[in-house]
Length: 214
Image (cartoon, rainbow, N blue to C red; front, side, top):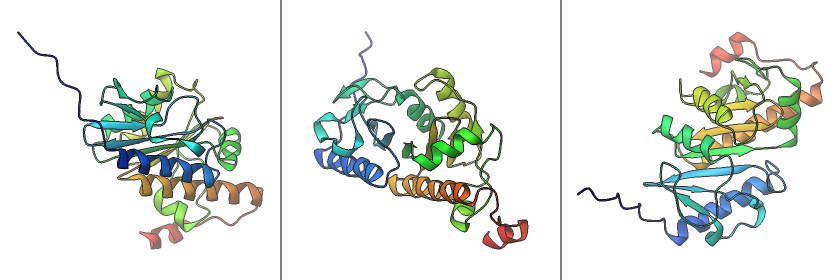
């Protein structure tokens, strides 16, 4: 008789406290607001996820959703409705341990103005050029839908990309750890803000400029 697979050991309380601090940092940096935006971190065989309907500004360790790699809840509150998107990226990228989904104002504005395609924001800053250019935009899909999960995983699961813009929705970034995913999100948010402030009159980095950054 086959035995059911035992659920993975839940992460420590210290790991969940660290996760809550990282969520608060996303809120403090205005990358999320209200109960929008979410975060997922791989922790051994478990995935830590922000819970649905809760603001990242005041998350407590006991509220953190902990799932296995298939999304089955182990402990904590029900995970974000976009858990499927995070899990799809983590399954596709064994090298990725953090996925950030942000809703910064500049990102939302840019994602509402720019059409879907393989390249969106022009290379306006060296930081953005190094970590996220060319930045693709995918068409609008309902948050939490299977279509959104598949579209994001299709972009981030191939070619080592670290960011994708979601039309009228926000940004998803991936990294080897939280700091890397968070840094990419900040760079893209800054580039989007600069792009909007310049109103199309900015000097963009040339191909020669980009070659010298490599």
